Image (cartoon, rainbow, N blue to C red):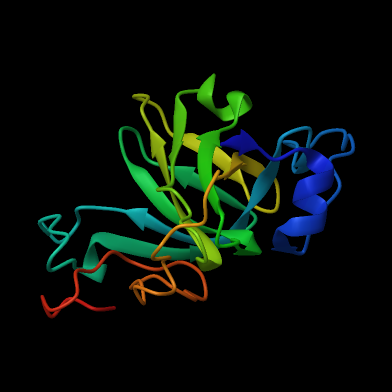
Length: 187
């Protein structure tokens, strides 16, 4: 298994829109890098709040646990998180697995990004979870870099891809809340 280089990502991975990784003064970097792609966070956010005393239950997730926001910046409350979507849309090839790592600029501020692996033949905009691990409010900037996606090519093509399994998050248009099939909590 090997990591894809910039020229391979550009040629073999569908990323729309794809940005070059050139320097952008005053902006958290984004775009193509040597061995990855730095995604941008979009303008739609779901800010976690416990105003209604909801219980976080992945089998019966309540949208009332979030406040919707569309803006150029988002303030994450102390020790809380937001869900957001990437600006970019992805199509992962059948012989590739993609993993996500947070950007050091945010990590050094106590802001942690979590994304589960992008499985072979997954398509869509990525829903990302951005945690503020600090006791202070934290600010993130829409349309700027938030995390890096690293693409790993397998030695062999998988027997069953995410598309073959008809994965529940396939073709998600963007920011998608969690749900478990058959539990009645589909968004």
